[in-house]
Image (tube, rainbow, N blue to C red):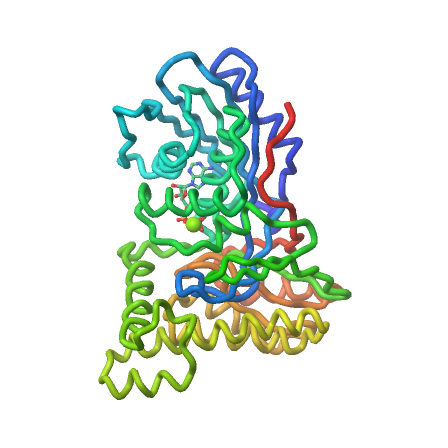
Length: 392
Ligand code: ADP
Ligand code: MG
């Protein structure tokens, strides 16, 4: 296996999806849509606290093709990034029959979107293909949700506003896979723009496109290729701990909290873990805003410092890193050309994002390969467009 993760490109994925659809259903698809994975540059475990986040959409895509089938059944085949093919059938929702979550787990990401689609959904046949790495903190989950949603828009002719679409896909993830995620993933996957990152205010839901003009620098992504299966309750637990801190402060979310408020929490003898989570959210929100300003001013040294500080906060305060991610960040420290590194995404595995001089990219990768005990893969982040309906 090569160490480089290379996007297959929209045209190649579309061809693959069309061929699979013809082979499976014996006819041509009539509608197609795609949605990308995403990379969060800074601001993790913040969106559900209504803070600021700075993600970018990636050239890795999940793509859906399909057609109505004049029945009340939805038949979906998904070719996963591993090459494994999975398939499922479920009834199209009607006024009298609601869709319900249930195994196999992957189907909930599709059914949740079908159930929350604002227009009437007919029976359909569909094929999903993807090159978004799954479970790597690059949001294959939002990519599949938003691509299915966009496919349903193309199939039914229903047009939904971008903010509404992101919110409905988030609702789908809450209700069907049962993951209480924030709004970041569905937002960037819907609204990403080539060569830009998106500063999202997760309270007002206003967003600003930030040109990602890095000059002689690049954003290197190192995939640790580990995903620790913990109990599955870690994310909801973090969310609940943050909400407890906000409740104790009499705030709707930690967005309104300031560093001085930690003293108020201490005075209430609040649990040490709750205190640590609150400190992370307050610091990480500030660092996201500061990193965005530094990027605009092209003060990339500062951006790099903030990457390292953000990693420390995620590792020691939020406690969502893992030995492999900590090790990769440690390996990056002090290597010529490296300005900063941090884990990205929900954590417990997945990727590290590193700001590095383009001329040092190969040396940095070699250094990681020689030091890191696992099997890392790499790609350079090329910010790309968000979800789109495709012509067939
Ligand atoms: P991440 O979003 O970081 O990749 P998640 O655990 O949130 O990781 O979501 C991964 C899950 O989403 C997969 O285990 C699978 O159930 C579902 N999923 C993602 N992409 C696809 C796809 N193309 N086809 C079917 N299911 C998918
Ligand atoms: Mg996800």
